[in-house]
Amino acid sequence: MWHFLFDLDGTVLDTTDLIVASFIYTFETGLGQSVTREQLMVHFGRPLVEQFRLMRPDLLDHQIDRLVRLYLEHNEAEHDGLVQLVPGADIGLRTLAATGNPLGIVTSKRRDLTRRGLRLFGLDELFSVIVALESTRRHKPHPEPVEYAIKRLKADPKRTIYVGDSPYDMMAGHAAGVRTLGLVHNTFSRADLSQAGADDVVDTWSDIVAVLSRWSRSEDTKDSYFMRGDT
Image 1 (cartoon, rainbow, N blue to C red):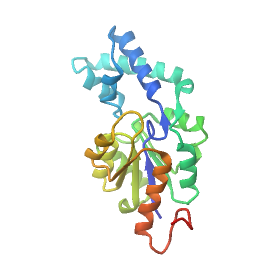
Image 2: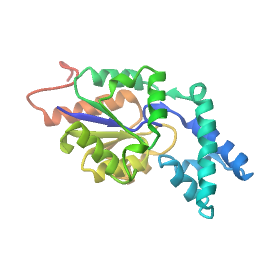
Image 3: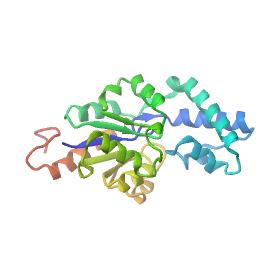
Image 4: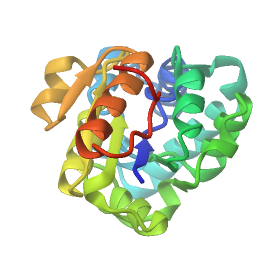
């Protein structure tokens, strides 16, 4: 049996427009400052507090806390109208779920918003475990979230794959001893993901299913878990 773990934002759900809009609102409302999409992209994939600290290291804790509140208020209010599926994610996940190999989510997003996004597209029942912001003390690129998912699933790291769209996903998975598959969506480049340690990088969800099939077949010569009859 294999275990397949997935990042959420940028991998399963396309939340880029929502995230950018929420940051722009927060900086304008909370600080009276503007911020560009390019400045925000550099820190995509990190927890909110870390992102604000990296972008404005001079701010005090109470100021950071206020920015987080403003961000979350806007993000939750606009969530359902701006979130979309990454093209092919629903079909790909259902294809993988049908193989009987457990699926999991490993994200730096809050648990309630994670479940809300998955429910929006009827995907929440596909996952055996959801590791969210509250699940661990340390976050990507630290391996703890991936390691926690492995522990919860009683999985073998050597038969676990983590799919994500950011260098932080690749670094966390690599450090946890699992294979990593990078997806180029609309934030980080193929070079960014490769340099962060991705074992392979793809461009679409159909590519994800194909690579997972190939990797599993290379390990399971007697039993193919994927698309039996495909060569």
